[in-house]
Amino acid sequence: MNTIGFLGTGNMGTAILKGIAGSSMKSETKLYAYNPTAAKVDALASYGVQKCSSEAEVAAASQYLFLAIKPQKFDEVLPRIADAITEDTVLVSIAAGIGVEYIRKLTKPNAKVVLAMPNTPLLLGCGATALATEAPVSDAEFAVVRRIFDACGMTAVIEPAQMKEIIAINGSSPAFIYLFAKGFLDYAEQVGLSGDVAKELFAQSLIGSAKMITDSGYSIAELIRQVSSPGGTTLAGLDRFYAGNLTDVVHDACDHCTRRAYELAK
Image (cartoon, rainbow, N blue to C red):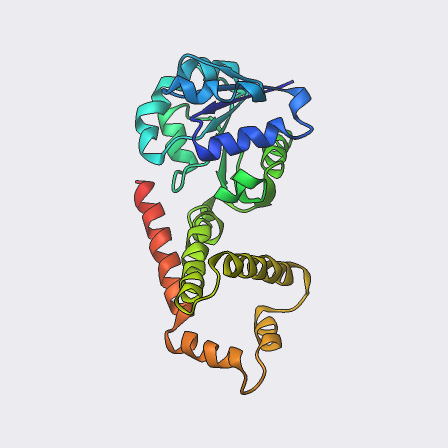
């Protein structure tokens, strides 16, 4: 029986909890949670979540403990669980910019830590989560953590040293995509198109384009060429993106995102 606890039950923590409760893991798992606002845990009772009265209580009850709190709260919260965790406890951090050594400094020198960078589509079971770990976490323990996130979407394994750089790629990128989408939907409104129709068409275009990236076997450059007839409408639009150095803007946004992750890690 896996015992899984959550420090924090905000959007991301709740999404992961719901993923577990809706998967094949439910029958082999006991769920625990603590939130200073008790009502937020009470709202999860239908998913089989047992409410704990303190951080230390949920830590003591859980083999897998999700640190689903804001990075700025780690200094305050982690020392409270240091005496409650054991050599068998696996700490799973979803906090941007927080590294393994930082967590060990606030808990135990040899604490087992898995780093995760999920994104908000986990709320719909369509998330993308990057995972990283190192000894003494065992392969079996890491497999359990990966299975949890797989219940909320898909996962990929990277090196711990890459966890700050990956944030822009999957953690923050939904916000960047939404801003990009806003430009198209604002244009649709400007030219008198139905907002609902434009949203449905553009959203499906995003979904279909994503599938073309993952499933077609073509490179990004070839996919662009397939849509771009010489002298046609697409190239007329692409010329404006090129003139505005769109890819340079994207690189700059990702770079600033990564820099902030390093700042949070200090």
